[in-house]
Length: 153
Image (tube, rainbow, N blue to C red):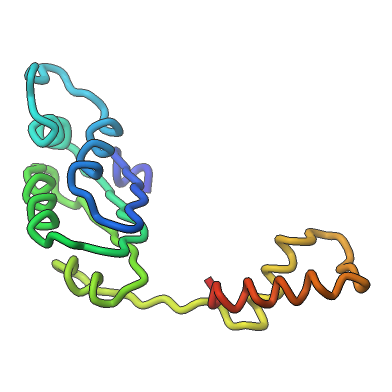
């Protein structure tokens, strides 16, 4: 990945996709280039810096896309790159969001781990190599409630 994409961004979007915040994070994470025009807008700086670079942008955990025009604006800005092979990867918990942001390629629906395997993993994170305390059943009850809410993720 590092060899294929010289510039990589990982942005946790969460509750609401905010174009200005995303652009600011891209700008601050993008290496400066020679002859950047002073007084450029955030969009212009991104265009200048990514003009000849292949990039990977991960927009992680989008919950809401209140303004679909913002998604289109982001794509227009990033599409100015003259280097082919750049990629935008979006993760979301909501199928409707996946459909809105899908441009080319495919959506892949990932399911959580099977309950039995997830419980093993969860307990390994909680207790590590220690023996599970048999006298502390309330810990398992609490853990089971947490695991149920996580749905294998």
